[in-house]
Length: 606
Image (cartoon, rainbow, N blue to C red; front, top):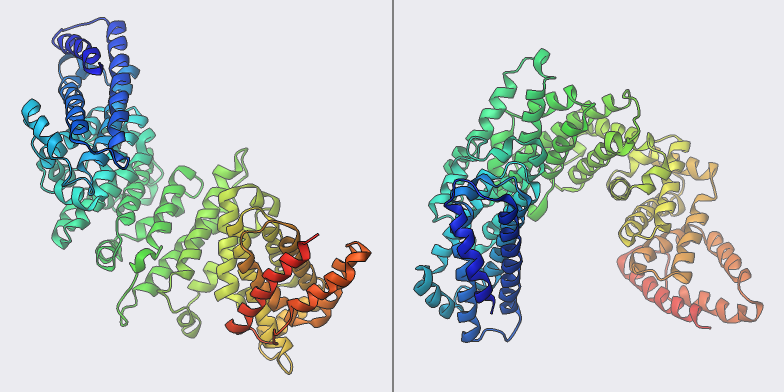
C-alpha cells in the first residue's frame, strides 16, 4: 500500500529534478507528501527494534520500503532540487530522511544488528546493489556530507545531521567501519569552512561542538599521534592567526568570531578524549604553547558573553577528570601547571566582571559565566590530579587567588538569585560541597558575617526540592560539624587557627547548629525525602557536638505534637540513639542511619 502511494510521487519528483524551472508550490506539496511517507517508513523500521519482531518477511518488507527512500536520496540532491536547500519543505524532507537513517541504523546497521539482517541485504542487493553494511554506511555518510556542505542556514537540519553522524562514530562497530570510508577520511582531514560552510555561520556555531566531538571520536579511534596532529592543523592555523594578532586589533569582529569558533571546536575535541592517552595528546598539543591565547581572549572580551561562555565552557570540559583521563606520571608537574592556568583564567575574568554594569538580562551577561567559573574550579579542586599543599608550601598564590575570586563572585549574587536559576544553584552548592570537604580551612578563616552567610545558604539548599543539591548541602554540613566535633568538642581546647576561628563563629551565632539540625529533622520526619542516607550523616555529627542541642530540639518537636502522643514519641527518640556511641567512624554512622530509618517509620505511624 505504501509503495503504491510513494511510487507516483517519487516518479513526479524525479521528473521535476530534470527541469530548469518548476512550480514552487507543486514542489512544496510533493516534498511534504514525501516527508510524511518517509516518516511512516522510519516508524515501520522501528518495529524491528522491538523484541520478537525479526521475521524474514519483515526484513524483506523493510528492504522494499527502504529501497524507495534510498532511491529518493539520489534525487533530493540532484538537478533543480540542489537549489532548494533554503526551502522549508525541502528541509522537512531531509529531516525525515535523517530520521529514517537513525531507525535503519538501530535496526540493521548498529552493533547489535550486524549479523542478524541477511534477508534485508539480500533484497537490497537485488534492488540497489547494496549488499552489506559498509556500502549502506557509505550512502548514509554521503548524505551527511552533502547536508553539511549544502545547508548553511538551517540549524535544525545541521543539528539533526550531526546527531546522526555522532551516533555512527560513537558506536564501536560502526565507528570502525566509518574509518574505512573515503568520505569520512576526507571529513577528518578537511574540516574547514571552505568545505563545510556552516562553520562560517555564527547561528550554527553551537553545532561546531558536536561536529568536532564526532571528529574527535574518529581521530582517537585510530590512536595515532601523527594522525591527531595532522587532523588538528585547521585549528592550529586559527591559533597561529590569533597569536599573531596585536593587542590593538584584538577587539575586532574577525577575532571575536574566530575565538568563539575555536573554543567550541576545542571543547568538542576535549569531550572526545576518554582516556589518559587521548587526553595527553590534546594536553601536550595545547600546553604550554597555546594556553596564553585563552587568557588573552578572556582579558580582552570579559564584557562579551558570546566569547566568554564558550571559552569558559571549554575550560570546564578540559579540567574534568572523567574516566580518570587526567592521570599524569608521578614525576609530572602537569596537574599543578593545569591548575595554575585555571587560576589565572578565573582571576582574569573575575577581576573584570565586577566593574561591568548590570544589564536587563543579568543571567546571560553575568550569572551564566559565574556558574561556569564555579564549575571549572569545582572540577579542578575535586579532580584528584593536584597536590594542593604544594602551593602554600612554595608560596604560590594560585590556589588562594582562585578561591578568593570564586568567593567574591558568589558573594556578588544575592542568595535569592542563586536559588532562582537552576544551573547557578547547582554550580554554587557543588562548589560549597568541595570547599567544605577539602578546603574547609579557607571557609573557617573568613570573617564571621561571610561565614554565616555561606553556612546559612546551606540550610536553604537543604530545604530545596532537588535531592542532589540537598545531599551536597548535607555533605558540606557534615564536614563542618565533623570538624567541630573532632577539633573542639573532643579536644582539650581549640589549638589550630581554623578551630579557633570556628569556635569564635559559633560563639557569635550559637543558633547555627541547632537550626540546621532542626531543619534536618523536619525534612526526615515530615517530608518524603529520597536521600535519607545523605541527610543522616550531618544529623549524627550535629547531635554529637552537643547533647544539649539534641535534648532541646527533642523537647521542641514533642511540644508541637498532641499530648497523648508524647510517651510514644519520646520512646522513639530514645531508640534513635540506641547503641550509638560518641564516634563518627563508619560503623557508628551506619548504626545511626539504621536507627533513623526505624525512628522515621515509628514516628510517622498514626
